[in-house]
Image (cartoon, rainbow, N blue to C red; front, side, top):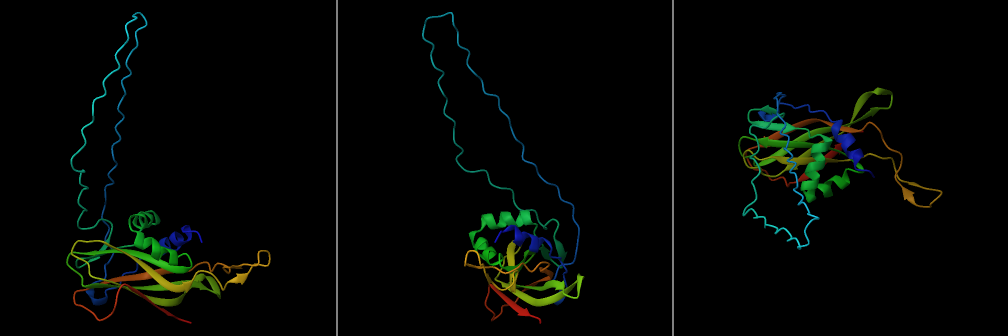
Length: 231
């Protein structure tokens, strides 16, 4: 399945943050300035060749370019986070499809998780906190189209995503993976004789996301995605 389907599902998610355990962010708009890298166009000098002399011309000697001993360090991330919703030192943000693509490219582990989202409904959230969190609990809801009224949504299931410890002022990119299929049951293609995915179940999305930072430990294992369908 095409990966852009995943992005369509994720970008349709809404960030509805609750106040559970006083650790779920509430909307707060902050302006941000985008830094545009400067591009330097250096002119190359072309040596002139004289046609009035028979003496062989000496080829210009190329000067070696001194390599930088150490790479230029990247600027430190801005803190507090920009364009995140926040509440009492907890920050959360739904990434755009462009941001998510960058996250997947940077971390191979996320790419493996995203493969599951080619067939299941998924969401994503970026979290951080002013202080250390022993573990994170992300609660979300999977919605579908009401079969009786296409303009309305119905709840298909509830999802709990668990993530491990995170140091203060550190970002975590969390993919929310449900077991809700994006396609109907597989069918047999009469032309090829092969089993193919069933029809797409349009209108499925992951929303109602609430990020909770826990300061004390737990016996639960993470990372984990626990999906409870509602029928």
